Image (cartoon, rainbow, N blue to C red; front, side, top):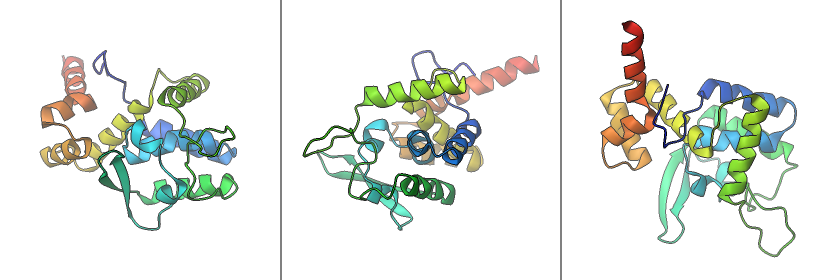
Length: 194
């Protein structure tokens, strides 16, 4: 799977999910959460790094995530049962952190705790990739994995592409096809058939 050289590679959803569960078994909830949030939500790093525990643990099936804190636009997403169970287990392992606190907050003592920087979070992901002997992934790799998993779960149909186009806020389905690496997958399958 080549997936354009200028974009993040798509991670293997099931391998990452297995690693998340393994980290949870070992009590490494922060590492599990760093992988689980982008993998199970499809959110951009700019969206998920500013989540609070209350947003992540909401009893509602649909959670409003502030897409652009400047304009007040929101994007509604639903968490599946597996994601909700993992998020809750991480919260329990954290020692029941205050639900109004940021999930990915800087540890520095200050009046206002800020979310970790994108660079710091991607650096943490790189360390996980090295430990797991995975290829070079970024937070965006897990967003793509979420999209590809959704595409296959929805029957790999044109309707699935339209739904993902909307979820990703792409201008057209061709962009979504390229984004998910579907064109590369089709080329690879055709080449293997020769």
